[in-house]
Structures are given as structure tokens and as C-alpha cells.
Length: 186
Image 1 (cartoon, helix red, strand yellow):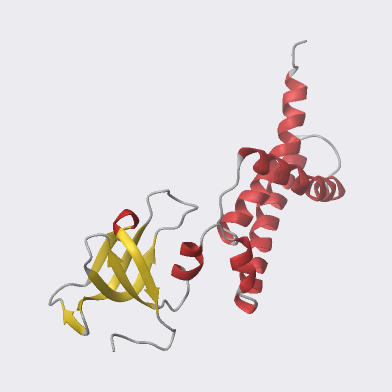
Image 2: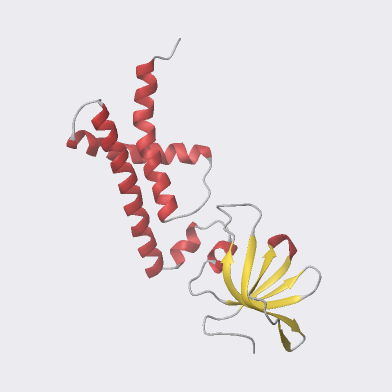
């Protein structure tokens, strides 16, 4: 049985607005990995109210209805993402419940924490987490420390003219996270 162009158009009309909403939500609010099956399921769930609203605004199956459903999907997903961001600020534990890795939760705090990073070669570096690769974006995570210092026992050794240090996750043995009030080494 051959699939007609109308059937393909109807499928896209159903799935794409929901996908746009889900993608906007994840870009603006909840950045996490999803499987292809999860994208399809969430796209279909989001498509139901989007299609209903688009049909209420402009009934029919024409191009204007499709454009309205795309716009509703993008704007609705972005607004939901912004609301999610506000909820996470009010209740940070929500972010932990939705994140895949502790790396993403701890290293995405704003303001960032002071860290002490032990490398596989046994060297220890201390500094403020300025940027950290997110597991949603890459599997090759890295960490950028601002104000880095080498740690030698109880001594902190300044690194003159060094603005920051980029450390690949594969080189890290452990990370010690100090409280938010900590502004530098002991």
C-alpha cells in the first residue's frame, strides 16, 4: 500500500508542531537528552493542545492553520521552558530530579562553586568553575576553571598570567566542591 502525499502532510501536520514545542522547551528550559522514541511521544502529547488551539484560531487544513500551529508550538514550548526555569530557581531540587548527571547539576550552578580537582596524574588544581560541558550537548565533557591554582599539600601556588584552565573530564579523578560562600583557597 502506497502512502499518499496527503497522508504524509497530515502526519507532519500532527508531529511537527509538537516537536517544535518540545524542542523549544528543552532549549529554553530543561536541557537533557531524550531518545528518539521519547521525542516522538512528547511531540504527539504536545501536538494535541497545539492542534486544538490552532483549529480554534483558524479552522481548516490549509497553510495558515499550519503556520499558526508551528507558531503556537514554538511560542508555547519557549514559554513552558521559561516557566520551568523559574520553577527550578524557586525549587532547585526539581533540576536534580530531571538531570541525568550530577556533573550537570553541580557545575551549572550560578554563581559557580569553588572546586578542587584531582587529576589522574595526581596533580591537584583549585579554582572557580566558570564553564562546564553539559552531558546533553556532548559525551566529551570538559571543565574550565577560572583563577586556577596548583595545590601542593596545604599550599596554593598562583599561576601568574594564567586566566583559566581547561580540563578534560577523562583526566579528572575526583572533584571536591566547596560551599557557595567560598571565594578562593584557604
